Structure formats: C-alpha cells, structure tokens
Length: 291
Image (cartoon, rainbow, N blue to C red; front, top):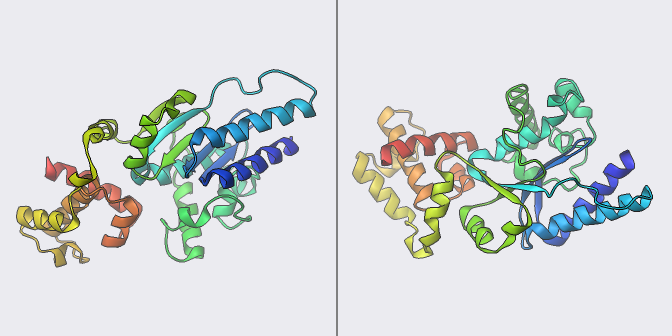
C-alpha cells in the first residue's frame, strides 16, 4: 500500500539525516528494496536499525500483527565506488522495468517509488543526493539529466538478475580507507557482506591492511615515474592529445594515482578532464603497463 511505502521513505529520510549518510539511488519493490548509500559519520547498522525496526513496529501496529516482518537480515555489498557507482545507480533504478512492473523509460519516469524520477527532473529531489550523482554526467543540470537518462536507457535489458544486488542493501563507501575501517570495526557481524569490484578489488583491499598513510605515493613522484617510464612530459599527459604514446602515459598515470596515490575517481576526473567511465577505462589499461 502507498501508505506503507511512504512510512518507509519517511523513516529512511530521517535515518539518513541522523547518521549523516547520503542516498545515491533507491527503489522500493513489492517484496524488497534496494538502496545505494554513501555511509556517513554513524555506522550503517544504525541507519538500517532505525529504518527497518521502526518500520516493522509501525507495520505490525497498523495491521494488528506480531512477529518478524522481514524474512532475512539485510545484505550489504562493499563496492568499488570509482568503477561501479554509475552502473549501480542504473541497475537499482531499472528494477521496476526488469520486473515488468512498468514498461520502458516512459514507465520508469512515472514509477513513484524510486529515485529515478528525481534524477530526470520529473519529481523533487527529496532525500536523494541528486547533485552528487548527476555531476558525473556534466556540469549543467539539464544536460546531466539528459545524459543520465540516456545512460540508463542504454542498459535496459542488459543486466542479469542479481548481477549487482546484495538482496537487500547495496552499500557504497567512498574509498578504501573507509572500507578498511568498516571491516575492522566489527560492523560486519550485523549483516551478510559481499564485495563488488573488479577481479583484483578484494585482493587490493586486503593488501592495504598493512599499509600506512606514509606509503601513499605523492602526486609529484607519480608524475616523475610516468615521465621516466614513458618519456612523455607532464604537460602532454594533461593535454587533450590522443597520440598513442601520450594516451598510454595518461593511462599509467591514472592507474598509479588511483592505486599508489589513493586518488579518488572524482579527483582524476578533474585532473584529466574526463568522465567517470573514462577514468575506469584508463585505470584498467594502466594496470597492464604497470605490471
């Protein structure tokens, strides 16, 4: 019922505010929900407890029932935000179309129980961090909305069921430092945790357990290393040149900045003036040169 959906969303909005978390995508389905959350100052478990326990109590009172409401504990996926953020946003918001609750992009625009409407300008932003998502598609709000919609449309029918889903909650935290602190913090006992990233993501996370901030490679040192290995000067690396040698040097720089310098995807987008997808592609290509 719509009243139940509204109650859930009201509790989610309050929980996000209390914990300092940000919601980048959301979708309510008849028997489950999906969230993409950037964790704030408070633990993820606190957010979910506020939402799920409060909602279950209210639901039982409304319908004069007792006992557990949710069949399973929620599941969380620790994901590599730099490489999977936009795919997760699209995957979550395409759920109603994938389940044939609505038809195509026109139906998604009208579906009231997801964040998609807000991202295409068909509804108020509400609690979704609209600007944080759309900045990956352009600096102009109108243009970014159009590019986001095109991005989602290209993915209709692409995703397999459960490809990116943890079953209840998809958790994205901005950077591996935060991931490590969460793994060490004991919060993992509250839910079933998986990891979403490319083939080496889990291994890289674990390897970082022994690393300290002193081991972070400075940007200037990375530039010198790339120049030494490739013979390409930094002004060329940061230019718009598409020469093969320059592109290779740029890919190596991008890879080293992300993996040795721990730069975020957003930082690399600004440095190289490229899209989020462009960063992911360069990092992947750069790994081949580094190895």
